[in-house]
Length: 178
Image 1 (tube, helix red, strand yellow):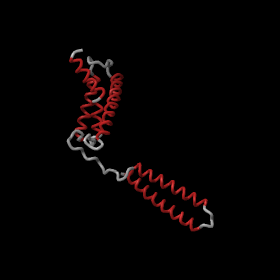
Image 2: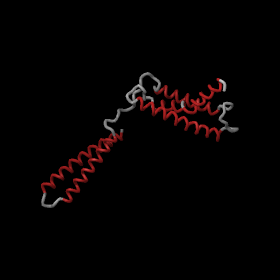
Image 3: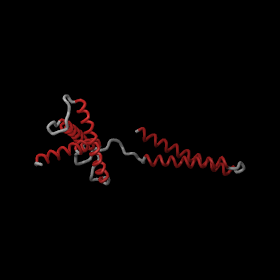
Image 4: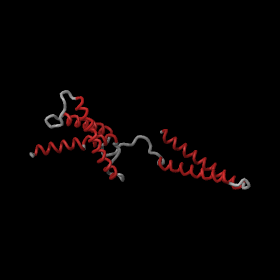
C-alpha cells in the first residue's frame, strides 16, 4: 500500500467518521469550550456527536446520491461524489460555525439569561408539596369531628402549602414563557 493510498484512506475516514459531525456540532453549540469546568464532559459529547452525526450524514447523503444521481453512484475514489458532497457540507458547517464564533478565542455570549432555578428541582418541589398537601387533606378527612383545633391547624397548613404551590407554578410558567 503506497503512501498515497494511506493519505486517501485517512482523508476518507475523516470525511466519513469525523469532520462533518464535528463542524456541525461546533456550529450548533458555538458557546461550548473545552477549557471550562465542564470541558471533559463537552469533549466526550463532542466526540460522540462527531461520530454519530458524521455516520448518519454519510448514510443520508449516500442514499440521496444512490437514488438521485444520474447514472448511478459508487462509493470509490474513482467516483468521489460522496466525498465532494461531504466536504461541501463540512465547509458550509465550518463557515456557519466561524460566523457564530465557534472557533474564536472567546466564547460567544449565550442568547437569553440562564434560568434562575433548575426546572427539574422546581418540578420535584412541586411534587413534594402536592404529596404533603394530599397527606394533610387525608388527615383532615379522617380527623374526629370533635377536634376542631386540630382541623383548623391542618387547614392553615394546607392553605400555606397551596400558596407555595401557586408561587412555584407561576415561576415555572414564567420560565416556560421565556
